Image (cartoon, rainbow, N blue to C red; front, side, top):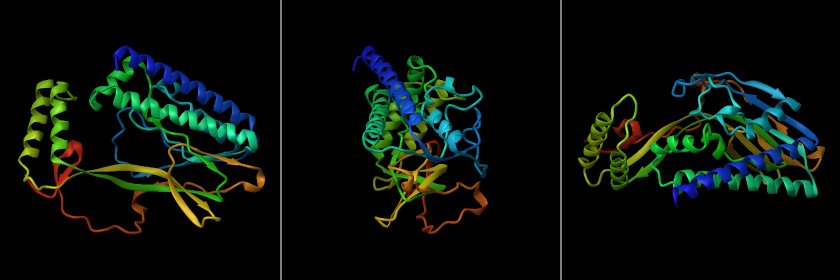
Length: 309
């Protein structure tokens, strides 16, 4: 795709997304509010994105205040929508749920609006991460050159719509992202980084190229049959547990944004639980399997192998 066409498509997509979010906000404000509960989390300031998280203090908000906070959260796409002191590299999370009365045509209209919004979000992510043809390290500069202040973490995040579950309870999840990769895939990634000829602070271009070259040599030195996997810890995140009695089934969802719940009337209002403060010292693991011994090969990529160099 020509760069001019890509930039035009980016602006069209973001403009359409802002308009759709604004329309959804107006629609929700017109509907009877049945119950709302959101949980404010501490804001993350610039430079504190990678601090170890041991404690999280939760502040609960209810009713119309919670609903208004939820709607503002849905519409927060740009840095201009938040304090300059806050990090744009850390996702702003507001777990919780808002339940509104929506029957018949209104239910269908809101469902269509949310579908349209999530489609635009997926399109925006596709444009930036795939159709731009840029490596991940070059995307930030490109995005902020053409969409100054866009917070991609917020812009990509979908709005989750639920139809009258019986209960919603909230909690915390600790986990690792684990992905098996091949040696060829890692080599290709490192070679792309070398060709990009960019630096990462605090290194100069020459120092960074030397560092990546050493990483490449370490991968090529591994035995042909070595297993490789990315094992990257994910910071603790809020989750929602959705229960439907008719299905006798509980589903666990990530809950970085308030869930939007549609109910026919007050008889369908779900039970909303609380989100308690997080304390790393009191995390209870139901089952923690023994991990196979692995060796850290490239720390910055969280790349591990069952063999040593």
